[in-house]
Image 1 (tube, rainbow, N blue to C red):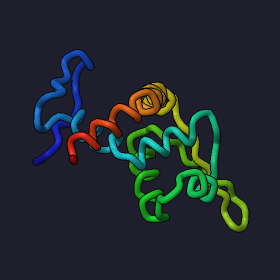
Image 2: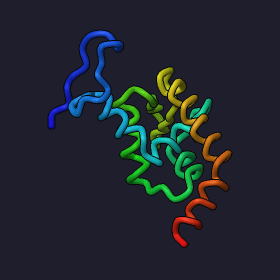
Image 3: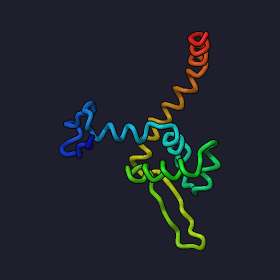
Image 4: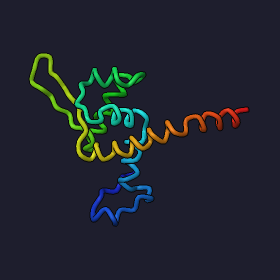
Amino acid sequence: MVTKQYTGSPDEADLTRADSLAREIFSDVANKWALLIIESLGDHTLRFSELCQEIEGISHKMLTQNLRMLERNGLVERTVHPTVPPRVEYTLTEPGRGLRQTVDGMCDWTHRYLGHIEASRHRFDA
């Protein structure tokens, strides 16, 4: 399926359409690695290796793929400093900081209901 290109005002965007650009964006940013990258960057500027250390369990490949996707969507800015070896840093853009507010809310929700969810899973699995 070809993604419909966005035109017009945001109020006219039909987020429920199968070919909606919004669905592609939702798919991109609603994965655990993207959310953890956004949360880790927060108000910081971090290098690739710092992000890798910050996010336990992420592979270099997954970090690279997600940083590229977030950069493509304008949520992360990548800065290459002309040194030997090159120093590359990542920071959230203004839209990325806006999304971070939502991610922070999701993290707060997770902390608040983690015990409830764990108990529900135990009951369901029994």
